[in-house]
Image 1 (spheres, one colour):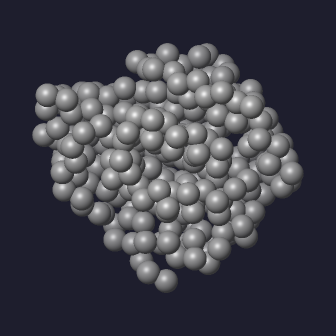
Image 2: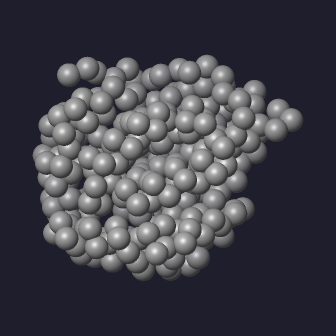
Image 3: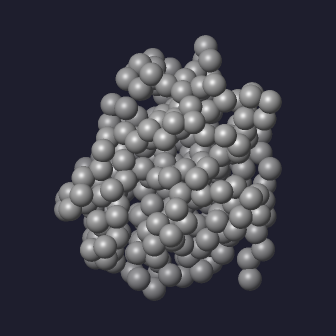
Length: 287
């Protein structure tokens, strides 16, 4: 099986970039985001996934095939990495014996069994990091942090922790995933941007999911967060049909996580509070 290089450098990008994380095998959300990208006329070469194409939801094989056929840039998340390695857990860095850990013993084996040999081989070609120049800045895409693919970094994570990734990568901009929540932090011309994920809501009591747009108009670096809705009821029903964790399926409808055990206290306190970022909310009609 081919082994991915740690970092893929694709030099300079121009024009708007669409960045998203964690499809988590949620094909309905992924299809809606592709429609949005098509409407925005953003080419595949300017679209980036920060990893965990597969995960909690019901259609891992279909999700991998969509991303592959779309031709976008993507990196491995911890779920892909452990799938490729043939591990028996998702490598999400959950507390052993906690609810997330216990639920992962259902959804991770389902994911592994549902993926074709060809899809796993393709996932193994994905790099762990991407690097490129954009609007005069050095950009690195990673999943958790430079210190570890499954390291959780949140808005409340102290800046010195984030600085370790900047020092390791030499980047001015880090585009990260894994944490599941959209946020931005900037200090001294360094930007830590997490687009959030599209496979699960952001624990704010709404079913919306998130992506990020970068813009280099007039050679200025700007970013905006955007939320959208999708056919979450179909995604919910497919999870139930395949005996995946019912409380995770319910999250697709309620926008509330089953538990907050991975979250720092600051993020725990925000559960159920509608996220208000600089955003344009794109509402997708659900049939």
